[in-house]
Amino acid sequence: MAAKGFAKIIIVITTVTAAVMELVDTSIVNVALTDMSGSLGVSIEDISWVITAYAIANVIIIPLTGFLSEYFGRKNYYLVSMILFTAASYMCAQSTGLVEIIVWRFVQGVGGGALLSTSQAILFDAFEPEDRPFASGLFGMGLVLGPTLGPTLGGFIIEHMSWPMIFMINIPIGIVASILTYTFIDRKPGEGKNKSKIHIDYIGIALLMAGIGCLQFVLERGESEDWFSSVAIRICAIIAVVGIAGFIAYELRVKNPAVNLRVLGNRNLAFTTVFTFVVGLGLFTSVFVYPVLAQRVLGFTAYETGLSLLAPTLIGVIMMPIIGRSMAKGAPTIPLVVLGMTLFAAYSWFNAKVSPDVGKWAFFFPLALRAFGISMVQLPLINQAVVGLQPKDYASGIALNNMIRQLGGAFGIAMANNFIAHRFAQHRTDLVSNLSEGSIAFTNQTNSIAQNFVARGGVDITTATTKAYALISNTVDRQAYYLAYLDTFRLITFFFIAVIPLVVFLKTKKQSKHSKEHSVQSKEEKVALKAALAEAH
Image 1 (cartoon, rainbow, N blue to C red):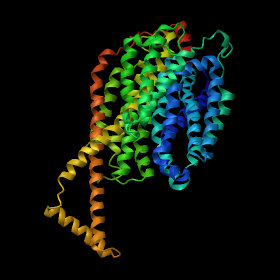
Image 2: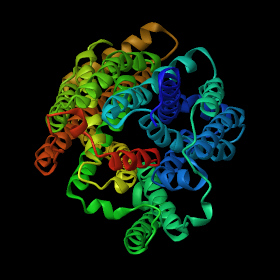
Image 3: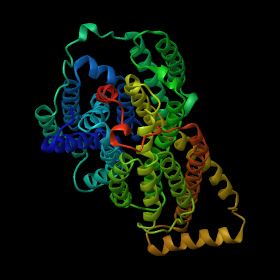
Image 4: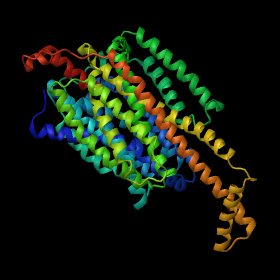
């Protein structure tokens, strides 16, 4: 039964806040790595494991949340996950060693994966089926705001406080959300009481953990480990291939699988996952590439970068419930997908033409296009994930769709890292080839810089010349990175344009225009849909 009045408001606030909190933690750590590495006495490469551990835990737990909610009871699982996330946040802040903080970040990721997935199911359950597109809009606000708010909030904390505060801010939010969950979120009839009747697919779960976990490790750590020159990457790549292949084969054969892969036989869901993968790639990669470009090349601080991202993103936050309400009234979804993909491609293309001396607000227009694009494509894809499925298969369809989005993001970041490194090397070679010690222009430039160092005092001409060469080398590096980032934005543009023709394989439900009752499912389907969405994640 859908929630009413004050209870519905509390459920909306609790679930959206929990989702935002989880998503913030996927990106807030990125701007704090330097401070954390210095405080804990480790390298940047070592401390980046706090990002990898969280991502691996997330991508493993998301497809299993439907089973875990059914086994333990949705409310129990959600509440325990929230407490686990909050407690792990505190332990991360108190960590004094690398291994300790990596372990607690993994635990935090286990709790966080449930927060994102189960929040959506609980929120949907608070609305009648015909109003769920609007609920998707409310939840979409968190999906857009979370990854963008992370760098802004992280940059502010690092500039004005210390790195443990990026974890401590979760404590009061988690405590309040836990109290509200315990008080206002109801249990479903009989939830968590039939454990003995639920088959536990131990083999499927183990294969999923091995395959998806190792795949995420390869994608997250491949660039820093120099890909297949690393023994760890080679071993994990083999485990990923064997584990995923074994998982697919076993889950298609077993009677009660942990994750029902048979639903991918539905053409609409199969092609929806392709779109979702590309959206995940674009969403996470753009949040990764733009801040690095802004800070490494354009000279923005972490906080300035976050602010430049946050302002236009608020447009998307506002648009989400508007689009959700329009879909609830019957707005077609496929044109929204096409327009959203086109706007995201336009965002990437505009960024691929940016000048290296732009101001902080020069990105507002392209980032606004990104915000509009995300809001127009996210909600229709959530809806398309279940079009054509039987009500009993809704949970599996939504769970797979969410997992694919996470993997798309991981693949996108790994691809961007590798592509940037390759293009940087190529551009640097091209730029250096134009610098010749015998050329008059190069010699005059070097001498001019060296004379400036001598004029400032404290160095002789030999030392000044060495410093001049270093300065020119740094300038070449900056220009090579600048060109590499522009190439990366062009690559993202290609992905979005290439996937648009696949909309011909999507379909929408034909609805009767005679009455609202005919525009939704039958009474039995409503009950099945509500139960499926409640257990979807």
